[in-house]
Amino acid sequence: IQGTTEAIFSRTVEAKFMNARIRVVGIDDFIAMKIFAGSSKDLSDVVGVLEVWFKPINLPLLEELVQRYGKDALRKLQSLLKEKG
Image 1 (cartoon, rainbow, N blue to C red):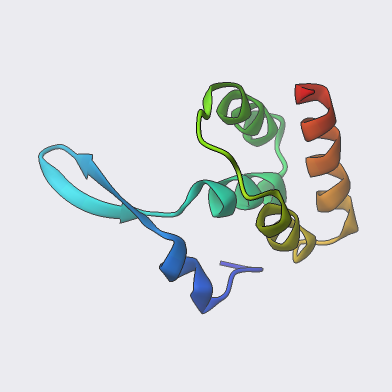
Image 2: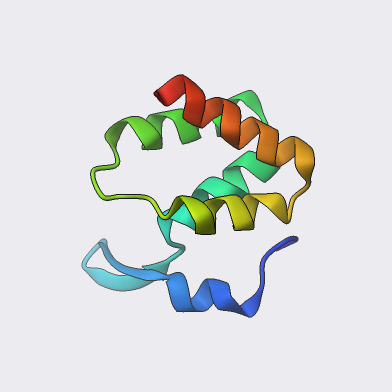
């Protein structure tokens, strides 16, 4: 996936899905990829995740990941975080 590195695999988390254990991207990578995709649905998904996510998000890491997708993506992230308050 454009903008990702091998390090993405070190940030995966285990989840249970239909009685199977699977590895999925971590929250930081998920948000970064959604911002890169950039559709209104993707950005709405980011807002929804930020509203319900109960663990601290590693903001320096998230900004680093999003910045790989360009300045516009970083501005989108900053705007969404500002809206969240």
